[in-house]
Image 1 (cartoon, helix red, strand yellow):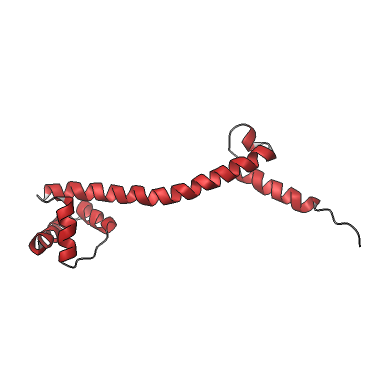
Image 2 (cartoon, rainbow, N blue to C red):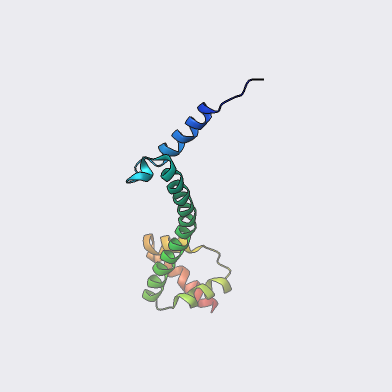
Length: 117
């Protein structure tokens, strides 16, 4: 049986790596050896930042809610506690959207949370 050389597969793998790092500055965007290392680091950071994005947005929603609650004369922690006691299950993302888009509706939610306290 003849020996099979994997030239085509190697070339395809290298092209895939170099295509994915196109736009990187300097050596990592041009040379295969540096490109491979840069790609691994980039993928690791991409995975980490996908997790951090969720954390950042939750912080943003809480900041918005805190400011909206302050305008209604209640602290954020009391507001969340009142929502739990009133069995109102709206996530923080939707609450912050309501606070921005419909302040009157948010005031009603705050009143029901205050009543539950």
